[in-house]
Image 1 (cartoon, rainbow, N blue to C red):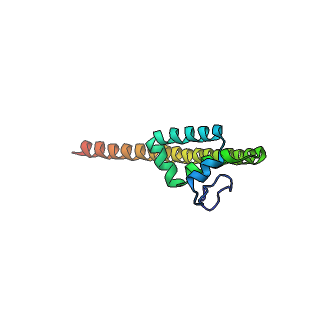
Image 2 (cartoon, helix red, strand yellow):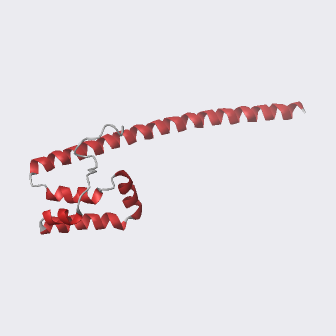
Length: 128
């Protein structure tokens, strides 16, 4: 995936936000849902570190989705996320396939070279 090619609705929002202002724009149920998601991510240290490295404002992005009032915009954003997830899966599958092909090729070469070394060693032992 090219870092230059990020779908706009999937990319990390980098704007600076005032946390209390954001919270005040959320409905009570939205605030509870956003808090639940952020707490769940925060419990998993490894996941949190990866997410924060990719998108330092991830908490604000979670809250942003709950502040949205237009379902069409949210559905479009969700479709973009799903498309990006599929592109990521496809890339992973291609990488895995290339890895397996290379590994299989190396197995063949290793077997051939070991066989040749064994043959040369046996030939040397026969001549001594």
